[in-house]
Length: 259
Ligand SMILES: [Fe+2]
Image (tube, rainbow, N blue to C red; front, side, top):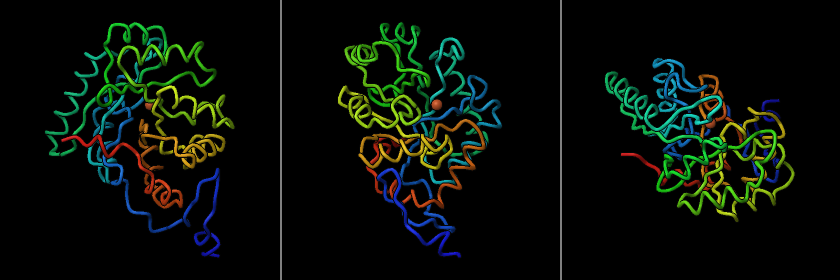
């Protein structure tokens, strides 16, 4: 019975799984730096208090992450953040970490929802990149933005390269691997939400993530951590056979190590 549960390899979405391992497949240190999370307290739907933020960072650190680039939402209708209040929140968080002797380098960028406000910031050249000129963007879960090709082109003519957050979560692309290839061909990086592969966002998102990973189309891996339930699932995921595929994948996170 035990071997039935933990002894079998399986293959899903074209992705090779190892057997589930109740002792865990190590930790998340192979990624080094997390590049998508909501750790600055009280400015979006992520951590609400400084104690929330500290707890989430301690959980990341305990799971092997060595640093993070946190990415509060900038979505004009819901989270009208800007570079000033984000940097202010970051400094308060860094100070709180310092006071608690927690050595965890963290800096801030943003997760931009593509709306008219984003286009204004783009035109003004006021985007906060993850690294170099690479900016994290998300789009509607309901429908692809009108003339999305043009928007991607405009982002690039302004000198930025878009990293599309969690492409596996957009149902209108499901079953269409060519749509993901097309995004990449047009100059987007693609970022996996780690928990998509654990089934956290549902079966169809999991299958899409497996297919994109098996096709080698992802560039980055991010936790998209908002709250402690995400931390609990990231911890539990370390026992899953999908870790064998993740650990072998050449994510670009290794280039993001912060001092
Ligand atoms: Fe996010």
